Length: 515
Figure (cartoon, rainbow, N blue to C red):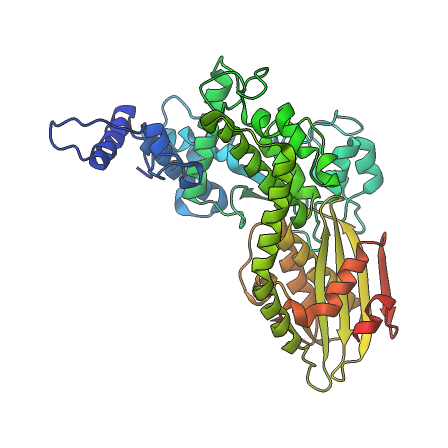
């Protein structure tokens, strides 16, 4: 199954055997399948049982063989296939051929799946074409949509680099791309130690291919194809009835029931001001939720979640119990539930505060220096704040760094970026025997591990290690947030500045009371 494409009939029979086993059928006995196979083979997170559909599973296994051909070009199998089928091209663009072997035809049958999941990780930019390759962090197409201008259609991403600093050439980027895409491009971190561009798998955080992620991507592709070929409306209906049972004016989609219906808006109008000001028009409820997650704090998201739940409960009360509570009673219920939740969390918070009171920053050994770093995120403005403080064995603050930068607001990426900027800060000051300490366990583990991950986070960790390896002696340690308080305050303060501020021998006002 992992090397050859199985026939449709055989795959159908395999699925049938699984269904028969599940429903307890024996020999020629036939039992009712109470749940359709399409539902049973869905992921558990989508309400299914997670049973594998053999057609999609076969395709995912074959895609893995294609991944191996791309990522291990020096293997014997990859060399033989290249020599015979794509001597002057690459596996993704190679032709299937009329007289090719069944093995090759099986591998190429999974290429649409492989192409869908592959994107370029930009290194030196010499292999990636700006307008023709998938490299741009825009989830719809992974390609820029700006009109081609100033550069030819086959120009490489390297053309957008400043050759001196190996960072983005901002005037050129702003001239070529529209404002929205230029802002996105500026958030892609570039390495000062460039390596060749390479293809990675976008469906995992490590950038490596997994059969499980490929299988679920294949299902997404199938569902999208079915929706596009369907003549019916694309909106997902809550019930079989077309009309909303409350307003009786619009079809009852999820978006309408929870957000757009006048009765739902009566409830939202009594929520907090930030939720009241939210734009009314979104393509889907998922898009609305993603927008709120990016721009609202945890307190408002709690209110949002409770409001959605109570609006849905209110709708069900009308349909099944013929009761319809007033919007003000919904608001009171939200306040009551929020208060109960905060009260239930107080003992845990008190215990955490007591534990943090005992935790203290540990000074390094005599003669050594310790740098603490942290990162703060401004999700609304796609901005990261970097804070770093260097102290000696007496606890004296020797230097600090506060820096803001445009970056995707992903926690691990921002922590890795802060660690890299902290290492460059140390290198600039010329101190060679240091301990670097942060509260991101994953980044610290990455610094101490010899392996690398294929992602922008992995590139930043690699760059940090290259910088630190130029020192006489260094080590990385993980610490708790309570012991990293100075760096935490500095990174939060950094979000309010436009560039960077370095102090040597002077304590910034934002941390004077903590020293």
